[in-house]
Amino acid sequence: MDQLIRIHTTSTGWVEGLISNDENPMTANQIINALPFESRAQLWGEEVYFEIPVKMTEENARIEVEVGGLAFWPAGSCMCVFFGRTPASHGDLPAAASPVNVFGKISSDVSLFHQVKAGEKIRVEKV
Image 1 (cartoon, rainbow, N blue to C red):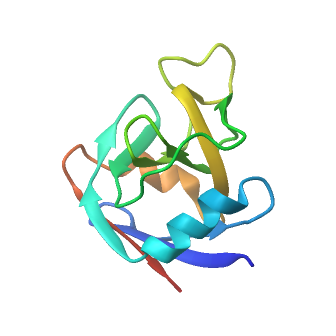
Image 2: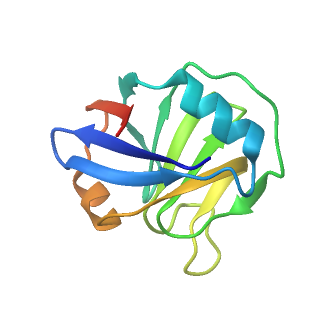
Image 3: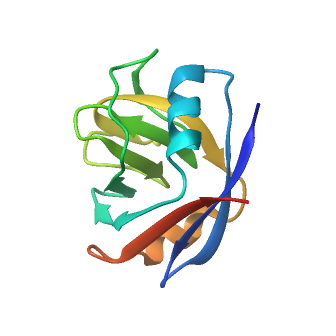
């Protein structure tokens, strides 16, 4: 079952996303079951990532992600929001530092994440 979520930072306000069970159902379910959670944003190019209370291995993991993609980074136990190119990108698509489990997509204005600052509090909750 899909789950609508909201991601909040001081810089962006509320941004909506959708967790989908289509590609990685185990990852999606673990994320949904851990909600709500708060963390501190970190930046890597045009990616915001932050540690979350989920531990799991790769599930259909990949490096390239669509703009607006939501993913779990098993190596760092982090949720990632990809909003543009990263240092690992070879073209226009975002690329993760190492394989990530894609579990959803931002459904509102992903460009708002350009305003996020490192260390800023970030909260994710169910709608």
